[in-house]
Amino acid sequence: MVRPAVREDTLAMVMCALAAVFVAMAVCLSKNYTLLYGDAVAHLGIARRILDAREPGWGQLGGVWLPLPHLLMLPFVQRMEWWQNGMAGTWPSMLCYVAAVAGFYRLARRMMIDRWAVAATAFFGLNPNLLYLSTTAMSEPLFVALMVWTVLTTVECIAAIRAGTVRVVQRKLLQTGWLVMAAVLTRYDGWVLGAAAWCWLAWELRRSGLWSAAGKSFRWFTVLAVAGPLAWMGYNAKFFHDPLDFLWGPYSASAILRRTTPSGTTFYPGWHDPFYALRLYMRTAQADAAAWAAGYLVVAAAAEGLWLTWWRRLPRAVTLLWVPVPFYVYSIAYGSVPIFIPLLWPHSYYNSRYGMAMLPALAMFAFLALAGAEDWMRGRAEPEWKLAARVMQPIALALIALNTVMMMHATPLVLKEAQVNASTRVSFERALANTLGGLPPGATVLMSSSNHIGALERAGISLRQTVNEGDYIEWPPAMLDPSRAAAYVIAMQGDPVDVAVKAHPEGLTELSIVCSTGQSCARVYKSDVYGVH
Image (tube, rainbow, N blue to C red; front, side, top):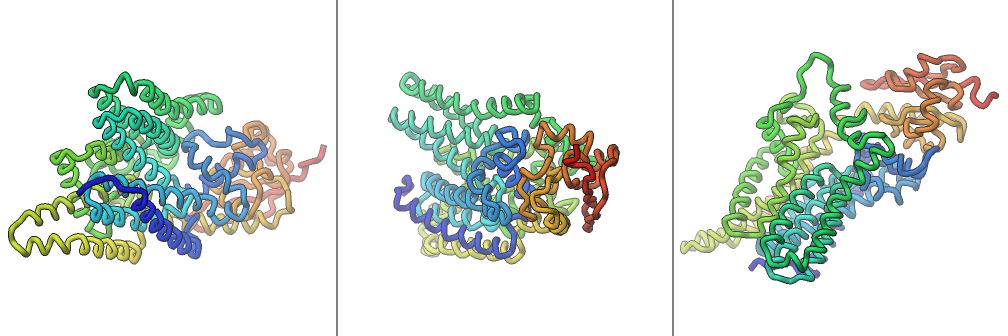
């Protein structure tokens, strides 16, 4: 019988999730995996500089990546050791993983009987890609948790609307509003998820007889839902003088694509081709969810589960878990967001983690299809079908364990991408950090931190010692006279400091050059005039 989970059931899942994620943390810390992603290093740097900067404050949040992940890291990243080893991002991500598993289980219990809900949750929670990301400063664990809980509270709110329990409806509307606002301030996927949840709840409430009783709560829900986008656009307008700077500013996806794509070449696969973009995204989601070609079976089963949801009139709002598909298909085709996986041309690694947004949907609907198949078998008269129905769930659990082992043995796709793309960056930042560590303690350093803040992190240099592009007052004059801006100047080939040094070399003495395979060289200069009046 399908029934909502009780607190004791959810608590058991929380304990299992804690055990799994602590094992993942121990493994990833021992192998130095937590800082492989350059984006993870950058997220920690943004969180750190909110308080640790020459010009601390909210203006250090930046204008493209949404702020909530950085705010959650803020209490942890001020500890130098946790900034250096990545634990400042690990603690919040681990908590988000546990919340995601608990919410997924509660949602699954509204869709299928308890033993299949356990199986679906095991497939979701034991995914090696999710476990790895849950030890890093990446935003995926937070968004997955928020998406699952947003869909859960939407489903619970709709159930309360149909049951006519006004107080529950009011409470669930406010809960959903806060979750939507958090999702909106985490990833841009959340903007589409929030809009879809708002439309669904507006429709359900309008067609019920509770509009007058719950209208005030719905208005607050609406305020919370739109507060996130408005606040972010207001922030961009205040600090970057353009409310849509995140969309087309110098650090936006489109600007990055223009800088990294050689002129005269075609864009990435899926560019202005939504059908190929759909194939690419779903293939990425398959590879993130299951080992080898088993992903095709998972997607096929999920499609069957989606059909069963509508045919059996199960809570249909759970289909909101499929929102990432149109979002990423549009982003790939028209939003300057490439995805490269080794399974498709050009057989490389980039943004494969975006497929993780589909893990909750694939896990939920694939196991709903298996639960439906078990029901069909139990309805057959032949004894062999009844025997197959009895052993189906234990076999599924064994296959889940096998899938996890196989993915770990082959190296999970998201981890493999991090390893491949970090190979040259990590060695360069380590070499540069060794050079920075040899500078006099407390010496002021002029350096662009956009690409290699990890060198400062490894060297344990406080950002207050640096003049960088986040210092909106000191940075512009530093570009006109580098020698008077800091005691030491780090110029990486082609970056703004390098351009400034070439334009204004007076007063600078070159000390050393740091080079590493696959990375631009960094030149270290000492100022001959800094502090001299």
